[in-house]
View 1 (cartoon, rainbow, N blue to C red):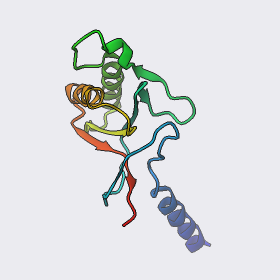
View 2 (view 1 turned 30 degrees about the horizontal axis):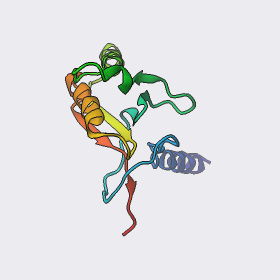
View 3 (view 1 turned 90 degrees about the horizontal axis):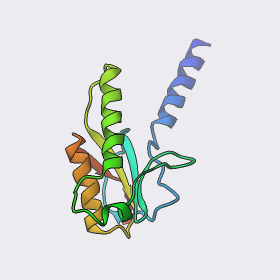
View 4 (view 1 turned 45 degrees about the vertical axis):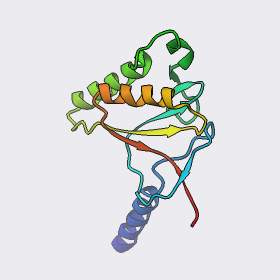
Length: 138
């Protein structure tokens, strides 16, 4: 009986560690050749309409490119607030802040818009930036 319980526990823990990231249905992700496994980190979605918090049912808008057209600022205030709150929460809970973020970015996003997102991440001490891609079949 004890062996059965241990076996079920190991099978369950192995099956949940496989897909840490689900590609968003809102995005058309780019393809690339890459063999790294995904890791759990703060996740955001970047579209031409804005930067969204990665929530499964109802993503919340953090920043909008229309608001930023009038300014030359390279920092997105909504995204900056979200990332600062996330960092403060991690530090308050006593965990180590690793500064890791995962970005799901639509193929159609312009370089200028993505650069503002990356700069905002860097300014808020999220220096390890990973992008979600669809792996090319070779």
